[in-house]
Amino acid sequence: MKFEKNNHEEYVDMGYENEDEYATDYIEMHMIELQKFKKKNPKIDTKLEQWLWLFVGGEEEKMRRIGKKNKEIEKIDKKLASMSLSREERNNYEFRRKAILDEISAIDYATKKGLAQGIEQGIQQGIEQGIEQGIEQGKEQGIREGTQSIAKEMIKKNMDINLIMELTKLTKEEIEKIKKDI
Picture 1 (cartoon, rainbow, N blue to C red):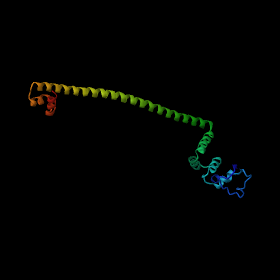
Picture 2 (cartoon, helix red, strand yellow; picture 1 turned 60 degrees about the vertical axis):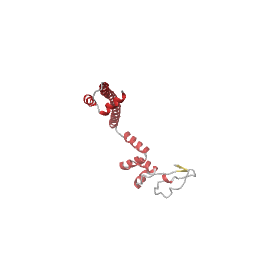
Picture 3 (cartoon, rainbow, N blue to C red; picture 1 turned 120 degrees about the vertical axis):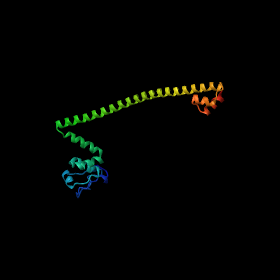
Picture 4 (spheres, helix red, strand yellow; picture 1 turned 180 degrees about the horizontal axis):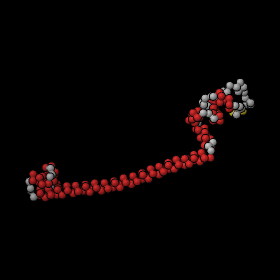
C-alpha cells in the first residue's frame, strides 16, 4: 500500500492493465504475484524491486548486487542465511565467528603490548645513548680545556708558538686566540 501520490522511483511496471487505478484518494494498493514478478525478471533499480527480489529469493549474483546497493537488505539476507542453517551448521558458524573475533582481539592486544614495549625500549636506548654521548662529549671537552690550559701556561712562559703547536696539536689561530684572552 502506498499513501497519497505514487512515487515514480518506487514504481514497478508489472504489465497489469488496471495497475494505476486508485482504491481511494489516499491509499493505493498493489497486489504483486511473486511468481509473475520472478518470471518477468525486472532489474534491481528501485527499492521495491530490491525488496521483492529478497522475498522471491533471487540468484546469488543478483542478491550480491542488491546488497551493495541496499545495506539493509544485505544485513537481512545474511541473517536469513544464518537462520536457515541446521543446528550443527549454526554451531559451526558461531564457533568460527567466535574464533575470528578472538583472533582479532588477540592481534589487537599483541599490537598494543608490542607498541608499549617498543616505546619503552626506545626510551631506554635513548637514555643510554644520551649518557654515552654526554660522557664522550665531556671527555672531548675536558681534553680540549686541558690542552688549552697547558697552551696558556706555555704562552705565559714565553715559549715558541711552533713548539706549542707541536706539543698541544693546536692550530696557530687557536693559540693566537688564547694569547688575546690572557
